[in-house]
Length: 121
Image (tube, rainbow, N blue to C red):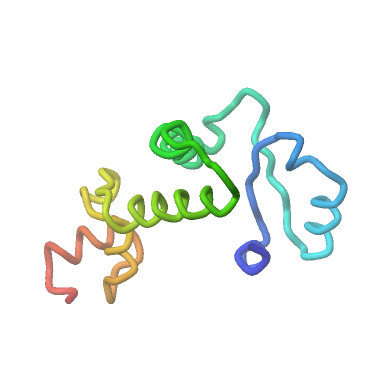
């Protein structure tokens, strides 16, 4: 997490008690990271993560009982792999996210679509 945050020096977070703390503020200051909190009651400030959270909740959290921490880890990891490696995503042309990582040239869904229609490979 620290590595990803320090690369762009900017992160967006929901305004929830677990994110509003002196420790987080101090960490961000020490690592030259700007915290950009979404406004309370404005989930559209970060629609992507809100959509993901809804899918995670509907497809995983609401469908499983977690009997232990290890059980939760196993079930969440199974869902994560399915979500990224098996489940097609409409936003990227009904392909799986893993195909973007395995593509030698494209770095975005738009570039991937353009490469499939030309000779990028």
